[in-house]
Image (cartoon, rainbow, N blue to C red; front, side, top):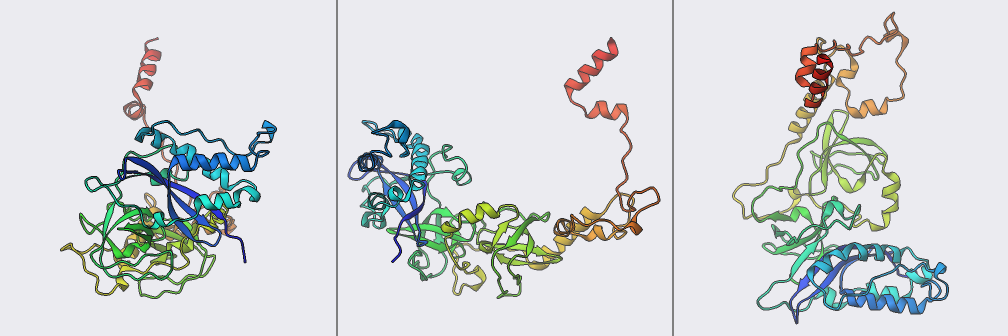
Length: 412
């Protein structure tokens, strides 16, 4: 049987608890080599006690015999009295320590001592009772800075609350079963449409399509369509199950024009548009980065779409506004036509006028045919060089510093 060991540890933030007395615990998402994921809570004194035990177990690697042989990362001792400020500022140090710890040689990183620290415990899945008068406070690392710079921490953030619109039964041990009307708190929003949430004492992954905000049907975080498109490549084939989806094979290059929070992005292939699961896409030029994170892939199947949910019940009188594929296609073609048109030229004088950025990218190495060039050696469809602006126009649009310099030269 294959040995179970930790592959990745991500610090999500910390909790301020008031029972039995005020104390702080860090939230760590632990990802194992069997693709399982568990959210655990550890106090800093316990982590430091583990650190001292690790140094005793591996004295050479700890630098106790010769300092130049040390590879075990350093960890500052806890303060006599922890407060919110020290707990917050220590997050970057702890995140770096966990990352370095997991990257140590297997005899250390896969040791029983390390596995015991990160192994899920009953109190992780069923947290202790809360204070009767005070609610636990959760502080999370800013989502856009988690992977790039963990030292930059957001201010205190209470986890967002969402309502469940239909009954959902878990399909794996990593998911959680929810019932219509349940209120959940979101710990992490994954771009693939699977969100990690907690409901009372239960924690696990659920499809974002089964959740709705409390203050209105619309998602404030959802971006507007970007008809310029971003180039992505499919990592897995998918056959359309609904009319507004696209069927694509593995390795196809497409353009993403709308990133939706439910994990079903709107993509463009030629002039056709349709929904496609984002978990089967990676951005061009990022293959190495994605390959290095294959072990942290959370789900193997796309989340269900909201249109497939039966007996969904919302608390909002108005439903969520959705853009139809006809609208996507019409706006997409209009954008490409406007981008391809040039001043003083009909829109259809050149094939390039209707090409999308994807077609331009695929044909970037093509050499123009000689028949399409003018006697002067210039292409017929080449843009016209605009005339030089007048001195008055330059003075009108330049900066104040430039105007001063020009005035000094004229006066001299």
